[in-house]
Image (cartoon, rainbow, N blue to C red):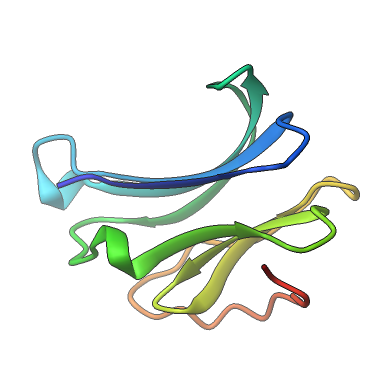
Length: 113
């Protein structure tokens, strides 16, 4: 099973993209959160990557939400309602990732939509 979610800025220039890919073998699965350029309605080149975890993971699409803040300066990955990773577009920084089984990221976030 693969899980995927995305949130595109209103300007249509950037998107936060989450991908969990089992690639046929759950033990070799990987989960990444990407910041990508948009090319029209198509996700284009990856401009930022955050490794979330590797290995089998009992996660469903309903467990994952990618969303932007109201000012569209940040895009975050929320897993089970908790912020697990974020890209701060204006500053060019990334936060979170590299987790095992628990998510305890200390990532500042406000005014999420």
